[in-house]
Image (tube, rainbow, N blue to C red):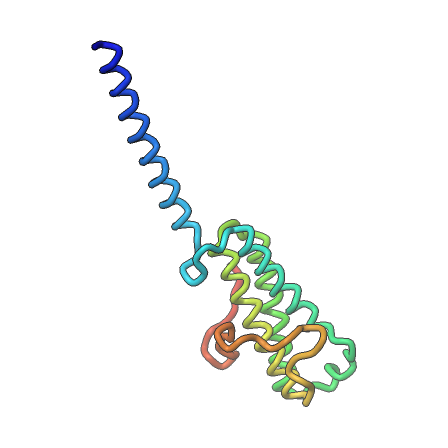
Length: 154
């Protein structure tokens, strides 16, 4: 009966260890996911952040750059804000390591796109073009410049 008791004890310990491992793995996976995007891995969040940053950067250098030279004060402020968002997002991306960090980069880049749209509207240009892609979905829009939030890097 000694070896049978040992085998039962060993089996119970293995089962308890497996259950504890699964629970720990699920808790770890849950804390890595950003609250607004369940299931988004760090790699997916990084790819999305890069996408929005590239989209913003492409919009800052339009094909007809001479039109930007004649910008009025409102368009100039919006362009400056968009460029500052691009710089801040680039800085944050270089230090990002978690999905939450990448979500912050995405948020700042989308804010920059909103500033870019304001500048285009002030210049009488279309709000979106081939360079910066289609308009943002309503859920992705962020507050504009005058909403009281300044962009700062860490």
